[in-house]
Length: 191
Image (cartoon, rainbow, N blue to C red):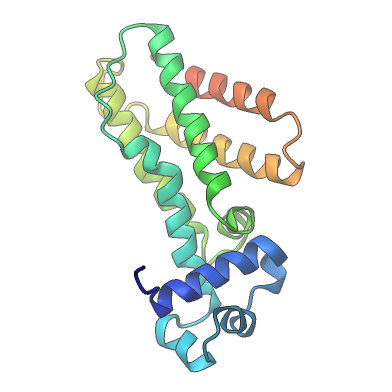
């Protein structure tokens, strides 16, 4: 069994803390206690708790966007192909987020903390560009950048929907997923 690095212990402890206690309890003392390391060890790897939150946020955004980054060889020929692609994107991004330990607290921090918002926004810009290029390459757009704005809006809608599901204990989960798929389909599709 491979040895877990100290940095990975700190990251796992931080995720556990976020999942168990939320953002309000997130501090370096609680993290080092869970990780079984000393405070100087924490500061060897992270300047402060925001630096650790930033790293976790970047990892969460990467997990959410991994669905779009995969080269599936998908070819869209019909509106139904397009709807199916939107469904896969929404559902798999949602599943990745639910599987990421501490994701709810991270979603909130990436939206609410000014020093971390750029993590979410930069990821969404990159993903919107990827979506727009994909639609252009599929012949569904006249210009490579034509669908960036609708993609940004759809990504923010997806993010908000996921955060809302956490806040409502996943009430109406299927309906919210269906509505989000419809939103993606209507925002992305060529006019």
